[in-house]
Each structure stands twice: as C-alpha cells, then as structure tokens.
Amino acid sequence: MLQDIILLITGLAVGAMNAIAGGGMLLGFPVMLATGISPIHANASAAVATLPGSLSSAFGYRKYLRQIPKQYLWLIVPCAIGATIGALILRRTPPGNFEEIVPALVLFAVLLFALQPLLHFHLHKHLHGKSKGDFTLLWISIGFLPTAIYGGYFGAGFGFIVLAFLGFTSLKDIHKMNALKNLAGATIAIASIATLWNSGLIDWHHGLVMAVGSTIGGFCGAKLSQRVSTHAFRIGVISFGLLAVAYLAFRTY
Image 1 (spheres, rainbow, N blue to C red):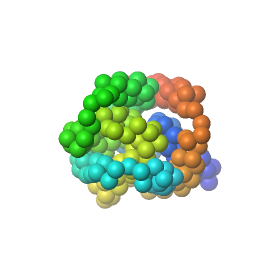
Image 2: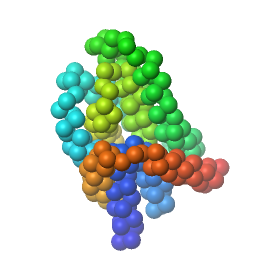
Image 3: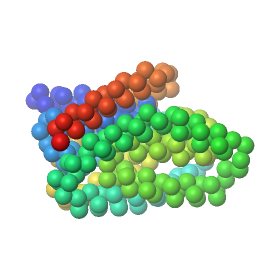
Image 4: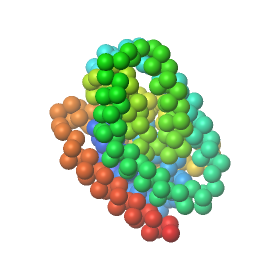
C-alpha cells in the first residue's frame, strides 16, 4: 500500500514535470528502481506511466494545439516509426547489458535537460529571418526519426531534443512547442507500449499506478506552465538528476 502511494505521488510529479519542462522520468525511473524492479523493467514501464500524463498535458494545451498549422501533425509519423524501432532494440537488449549503460543514459538525459534552453536559443537564432516552410519541416521530420528511436529505447530526455528541433520552425510560442512536444511524447509512448506489449518487460502494476498520478499531474502542470517561471524548477531537476546518476553508478559499478 505504501509503495503504491509513493508511486502515485511520484506520478503526479512526473506528469507535472513533463508538462512544464520535461525530465519527469529522471524522477520516476529511480523511484521505480527503489521499489525493487530491474532497470530494464522500470524503463519499459515508463511508457505506461507517462502516456496518460502526455495525453492530459496535450489536452491542457488544447488551445495552443488548435493554433498549430495542420502540417506539423505529420511529425507524429516519424515519432511512431522511430519509437517502434527503439522499442524493438530494447526487446533485444539483454537485461544485464542494459543495466550497465543505465547511468550513462540518465547522465545523457540530464545533460540534454541542462543544455536544452541554450540549444534551442542557438538553433532559433541561427535560422532567424530565414524561410521555414514545408521543406524545412521535411528535414525536421527526418531529424525526429533518430530522436524517436532514442525515445522508444530510453524515454527520458527525448522531449528536450524535440523542443530543440522545433526551434527550426516558424513556431515562436513556447506553449505551442510544448503542446506539440506532448503530442509527440504520447505518440512515442503508444508505439512503445504496442511494441513491448507481450515482451514481459512491462510491469503493469507499477506503470498503471504511476500513470494515475501522471494524468492529474500532466493536466495541472500544463496549466501551471503558462503562469510560472521554470528556472528554479529546472535547477531542481538537474540537481536531482545528477544525484540519480551518482546513485545508479554506485549501484551498478
């Protein structure tokens, strides 16, 4: 019972974090490990835990989703294809090998989270004043493919890369970008779950309990993100992420 309460509360935080700035599974993943399941099962279960939060976040951003040009919705196609490939690779990864690379994967996600604002700024500045039409959108969709492969294999951090790529587009409102990011996240989670459904890697109990919390947290986070600054929030996530990396490295090596 206590474990379920912890998973539920963690899900609330994960959903809110993903809606506001991303990085929710930097918290959710270590908590799942602390409950006793293996890294590869915690990773596979993350898609179940985050899917409802991504959907409720997208609903919370629905006003901005309606304002996004319809051609941007084609970006969900490479997300679905890439996530399926990534999840298939995960299915074929021996659990022992995955556990060895987990600290590096989490560190990579933390670095993406820390550098995402800088990366987004430079990408947006680089293309300032240039044409950003359908041709550019085609190249962005190609860039989405390896991003989605990473998302299907290890979900934490892919949203930061998505936001960076959206800096190439004509979208200037961060809320529109977050709305599209959450829609991409939901697509990746659905494709991952479909691919891993009968693999035996998903811990449905852990995933579904955390999913209940992430649903509420995702909707509330989408509303809060439109009112609050994310600077202090970002520092807190980075600090926790680095502590998680240290813990996972000590546990593994």
